[in-house]
Image (cartoon, rainbow, N blue to C red):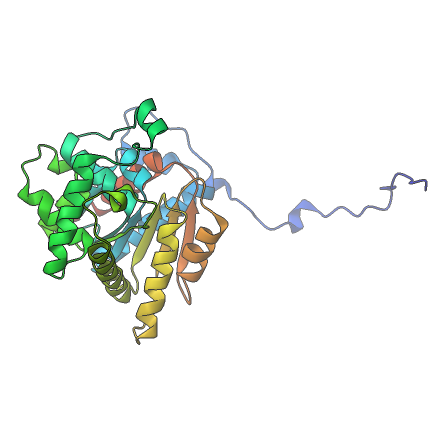
Length: 317
């Protein structure tokens, strides 16, 4: 079969005046002038794409804070590996963040930072002999806290938070769990048995781990039940947290809680399609807004909350 090139002689162009405006000149970036301050820097950013979504998310957080609504952060382990713990601690102290939900990996990172002041990586030998996932002090502290906390009917977040505050570690100011416990901010932890190292430590007991994590899931459902007109930001977790958040919100609605007008966001350059669907599409139903900020969390999160604090000014300490 012979195929002839298609003739464009009868092509009908559209006058440019009939095209809708995609981006106005007022939304373009402006040159930043050195020394003009952070507010001027924000004004220099284009009001388009990821930057526009950041501004909208900022406005939602500012509005939620001013109206005493929930602002909940859900974090994977990379958030703390990226050094964002001190920033989150400060936001807890300033009452910007009203609740935290952490993966088991984030819990491990936070405890190791509290103990050492830094994160750790396995040696080549540990990678080869299967010991890379088991850190003695981390596993002991977490599991001892969980095992005791179960007798007090505490969840993982509260159990570990109290244990950290009772310790004499030099770096507690970097721990989001210790800071949250100190300021009375609820923290739920959602481990994945078989994936999180502390669940394989000899001090781990399945009964305690199951009971405490189930209580934390109920705590998260309670947080989301009060999240109408609030904000949920999921950072660097594409598997565990999106599903846990969705199930917790479904549970709240199932028992009769009316939850709506929720602004949700994912900050994750490699978010999965299921995470985007769960967090941005399903959590915002029926009348909320959702955003996917695709930049790295170590840049986007500080920029987002710096813009929030700039907007609030003297309203926060």
